[in-house]
Image 1 (tube, one colour):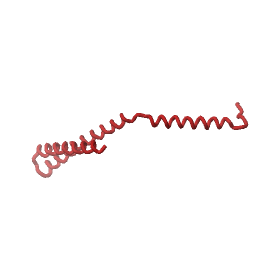
Image 2 (spheres, one colour; image 1 turned 180 degrees about the horizontal axis):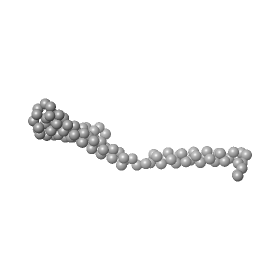
Image 3 (cartoon, rainbow, N blue to C red; image 1 turned 90 degrees about the horizontal axis):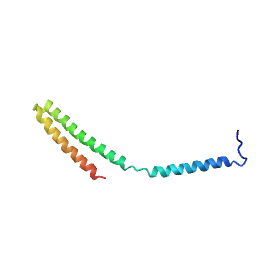
Image 4 (cartoon, rainbow, N blue to C red; image 1 turned 30 degrees about the horizontal axis):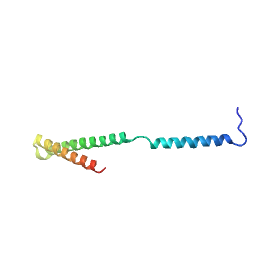
Length: 98
């Protein structure tokens, strides 16, 4: 096996190497481009708001048709349109906040 020098320079060299490696990793983390991730997150948010508004309005329209008004297609049609309007409002509001 190899013998360590008595002054402990091997551990000093390892500590120096570890410090330089951590500095390089920190610089690399700072320079990672996250614009694509931000754009994808915003797109998924818009998709969720759009689908949620439409499906929520459709569900409320179905409930209104089935249990309140008993006028089969009109509650779902009106609910879907109101859901689209609510979804567009939410999308516009969230896009203006940033």
